[in-house]
Length: 261
Length: 252
Image 1 (cartoon, helix red, strand yellow):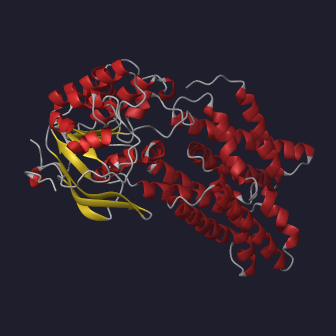
Image 2 (spheres, rainbow over the protein chains, first blue to last red):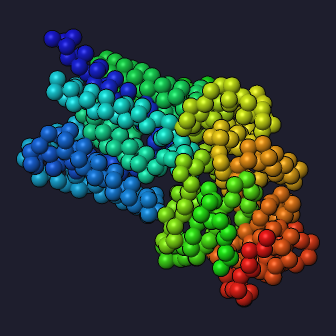
Image 3 (cartoon, rainbow over the protein chains, first blue to last red):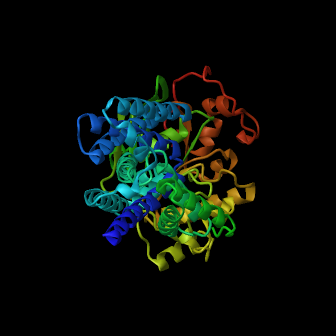
């Protein structure tokens, strides 16, 4: 039974690392960190709604995260989503979410689980949702990979190659909302962006191609999950923050590696 | 309005195109047609809508009025002014050439050799000099076997010999492939020697025609100043200019 529990925990963490690695590279390449913050903070609002209705937490977070991501994306298209706007939206969503959750009976106790993750509470059903989400994210990214890279480099270059930059941005928006929904139980709404950015940033130095960077970011994320969970069991520290702390240590180690391209 | 002969046969043309950003009209009533195999250069002061015109023709911007016509299945090679990169994305020359369409190694090698930067497949884009990057961008555009090459200020940041060498290369490419070439440029003196046709743009088409004709046109002089054939161009051109709008007839 213990083995079963451990396996679930590791599989949940590895799933998040697998989806966050390649998507995190795009977040770094396209400077979407604040976009990610706004989307992931909105997930708390999704949790509040899901508890109130009540509905499945994954569905609730996915829906609200997607709405937020689409709203931010639309504002960006019109040149309105500047630093400040995104900051306002991210923290407004978080605050309204927290206020909303406080109205739901008995939910207050569980709040940290959604802010910082509660990977130890991941059940079989959760694990199934996580891996379905991960598979969807990976399928999206692999399907659109070349188009996404081209659009990221230069949108006119993409248009000249008969691609539609708007559609490619939508793919990333959808993938981001999926990762948020998948990762909220594992690392929590506040640390999802960390799992996107830190492994990707750590992977930049030794990589020479986008594919190498995505693969390395995934590996670093997976290593951070293993190390963080080990530390969590060993020192009885919270799992989500331990995973992110491990990723940050790997990032610092990576700084010692000379940049290759 | 300049009359465009044979506009229905051209690979790429725009008719009566106007573009607005917000409330401001960036382009108004622009007619332009690119004929097979000709080198057309668009010149104009900063903010005159040159890049916008290229992006309309490319299909990246939908015009508010008017229409852009492309020959069915037209292969476009596009060379952007710059890439949105500061080394955040690791990218070798070889990988870049295969975006988004995968290219064979021998085709990539040949394209790089053709534009004068052989054997740099393994180099990172971030480590290339300005001149090398321009050539790699051109190589990538050529791999599409374009019927028209569209280039947005291809020699930006190059020194004079580099600029001259690049335009020589463009002329050679045209001679070899027969592709039409449409570009935006600031290098007036080179433009005048390297183009078949020059379009002087300032929100609208001020004048167009063979370089010599345009250089003597009053509209051109109003924009770029007299003397030295425009080599010391005046770029701080105000939009309330007062040249008459009876436009130069197609000067060929």
